[in-house]
Structure formats: C-alpha cells, structure tokens
Amino acid sequence: MILDLIEIKPKINKFKVFMCIIIILLLLCIPIMFIIKDHMNKKLNNEIENQNVLNENNNEIIENNIIEEKEEIPKVNLTEIGMQNVKNIYKSEEKVAYLTFDDGPSKTVTPLILDLLKEEKIKATFFVLGSRVELYPELVKREYEEGHYIANHGYSHVYQDIYSSTQAVLDEYYQTENSIREALGIEDYRCFLFRFPGGSSGGRYNNLKSQVKDILEENNIAYVDWNALTGDATGENLTKEQMFDELVNTTSGKNSVVILMHDAGDKILTYELLPQIIQYLRDEGYTFKNFYSIIQ
Ligand SMILES: [Zn+2]
Image 1 (spheres, rainbow, N blue to C red):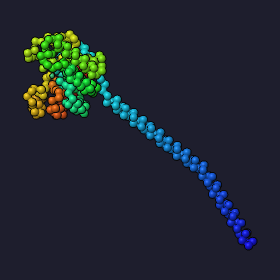
Image 2: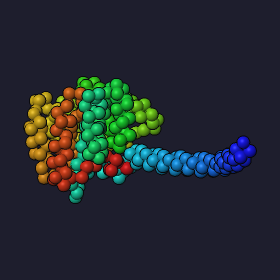
Image 3: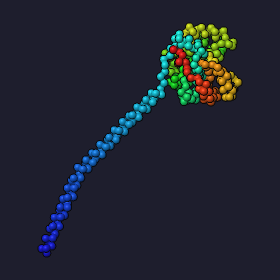
Image 4: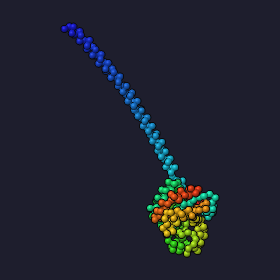
C-alpha cells in the first residue's frame, strides 16, 4: 500500500509538468498567432494597394486612349488665302482626294459611312442640307466630332425654291448654318463653304447662279463643285460596277480630285462601294484630305 502511494506521487508530478508545458506552449502560441495575423494583414493591405495602383494606371491608360481618340477640331476661319485655296483646289502637285458626301445626313446610310471612314482613318467633307440637319442633329454632331468638315448645301434642295432669287440662296445658306450651329451647340460656328444643289453652273438657273457667286464672295463664303464622281445620283440607277468605272474614268489623269457622292437614305450602294473606292485611290497614290486642310 505505501509502495503504491510512492509510485502515484511521481505520476502526478509528471502530469503537472506535462500540463505546465502545454500551458506554456499555448501562452507562447498566442503572441505568435498575433504576429502571423499582423503579417498576413500587412501582406493583404500591400496587395490591395498594389491592385489600386494597377487600377489607377489602367484608368490613366483608358483615359489617355479616350483623349487620343477625341479629335482636335480646328477652329475654322476663311481668309483670302483660304478663298484662293478653294478656287485653286483642282491645281495640285500632289495626288489628293477629297471625299465629299451631299444631301445628308440620313439615319440609314450616314452612320455606316461614318463607321467606315473611322475604320479607314479618313476625314471627309459632308455637304449637309439644313432640313436634314434638323431631323438628325446628333449625326451632324458625330460627323463634326469625328473630324469631318461640315459644309453647306442649302436648306431645301428644291431648285424652284432655292433658285427663286439670289436672296433665297443666301437665306437657305444662313438657315442651314443656323441648323448646324444648333446641332453642334456652337453659337459662332461658320461653314464658309457652299455647294450649289445641282452644281454652280448650267441649267435653267445658270444666270442666277452667276449672280449668287458674287454675293457669296461678298459674304466671305467659298463654293466648290466636283471634278470626279461615281454617278450615284444620276437617276439611272447605276450598278456598283458602273459606278466604280465612272469613278475610275473621272479621276483618271487628275492630281486633285473632289469626288461627289451622296449619303442620302437611298444611297446604300455608295456605302457598299466605298471600301473599293478607297482601296483604288490608295493604290493610285492619293492622300485623303478634307476642307480643313485648305480653309484657313
Ligand atoms: Zn445635292
């Protein structure tokens, strides 16, 4: 019995020592856990900070891209030099092509042409009708913001109205200019460039058109016709092949070509033919420009 008691005593002591070690270990673990937790937090914070910096950089890159995509729109003014440039537009040492689109904007064709010009990085000139500008002001704004030149083609395109008097031409010009101003939200916007519906000479209104030319000049307004075309408004419903042939024939041997086309709602063939026209002109060594390059 006594022997038994002697044996139990060291057993209890061993147990106590064991428990003590466990407790000490546990106590040691607590600060270690805090240190690990602290370390983990710091690591997590660093990662979040790095991610934020990355996001900020990405945002800056996106912002820069947006800034790059936004066109710098030149402030238009027509000086005597600019007026002479327009008059001499067909005289050029270099091969230059001015793509011009009349009678728009239209809901169906204009956006397609704008998409294509954007893809091809080409700036064109749109001779808009005031009556169409009022229908689709957002398209005129888009044309302008994408770096195309907005020029004036009168308001009605009804010959007996616009050519009823010299004053009627001037009235339609200014009415259209007002519509463009409202569409663009630019109060002092001026076109400086007019294209006579049907051209600046010939036909039954030839005499009146001659008088209008002088009046336009007095009002510091230039005018331009064309020296090449696809025939997309001849009324003969040409096929794409015929229109392409017409373009090849009318540009042949010319350094500076002002090409008449149309972006009215029924001119889907003009849009469909445009990639081929652009490719042809590029292969022939033409550079594309619009009237911002000569109206100054
Ligand atoms: Zn027209």
